[in-house]
Image 1 (cartoon, rainbow, N blue to C red):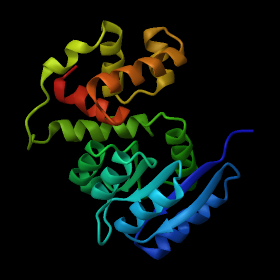
Image 2: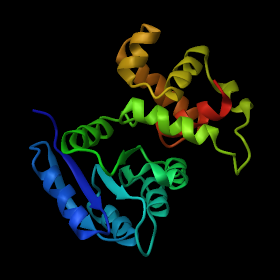
Image 3: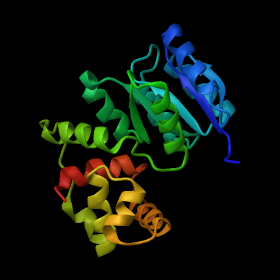
Image 4: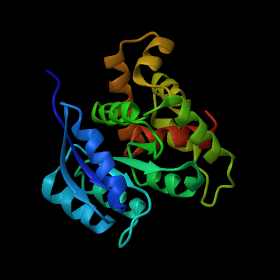
Length: 216
């Protein structure tokens, strides 16, 4: 039997939050351990409950989802799956830089919501590769408001790690990368962990954005 994924739901709209909780509780392998109506409460409950994952709305009172995500990730309380819409890319970009493990569109159906939670809980991070590629491409096309990434950061990576980073930039899952590079999926996970550590990144999604910025 697969392990139970403990989830904290952070969403300021009570009706939306209730719907998310209802969907999550329908799955035997997912447990909702808490609910938060604002960003500050989300951080406080993450500290108290130590869930596996926080489902975080991007726009919330008292403390926005980006700031809340940064605190939860920096303090290593849980992985964060961000709830958003495509017309809020700048907020999503902020959340990804803050270390969010992935994002989920608010109009996602129940089946895909449960699949996304399980994906992040497995450490995959990139939720829906096709959607992720589209979102990252939109970010890459936007004017950069901060200094572009320095290509020198790649010097510490091995050739194989650079290949894996390039695949992450395309929004590929571990299974996809394993197939392309003809290696075991467990080996891909090892390479991802090592390159994240070398590049001092918090998530594979940050690595995907870096790959886009560097054009690799």
